[in-house]
Image (cartoon, rainbow, N blue to C red; front, side, top):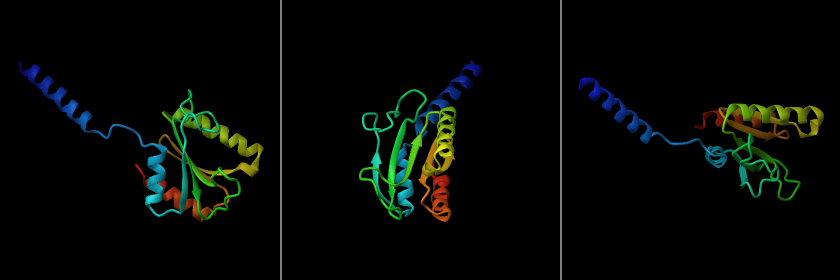
Length: 148
């Protein structure tokens, strides 16, 4: 009977802990909002869905599950509708994120004009326009690494 009571207590504690947890990962929109809340110079934000992702990768197998592009107000915006500044991509696992980063790096090697700053935290990828100075990119990196 004592063993039963102990097991029942453990189950109840586990249910309470699980029920009180935050219940999920941050979305790309949560993260860009966190960057903006820390007074980084973020202007317009584009939140992607499966039906408006120009790469047609959002939600597809082994691809990102959340994505935003954002304007850094210090970067000249030269193409209408294509925000220059940065992007955040969220992946469901580290393997998918690593595959994406390796792909991007291969593109940067072949076409250096497309090079970006890349910062990884957990299953999150922060991509920044290379026209930012290293000091400006570091401002993003510091805040990004503090976000939950």
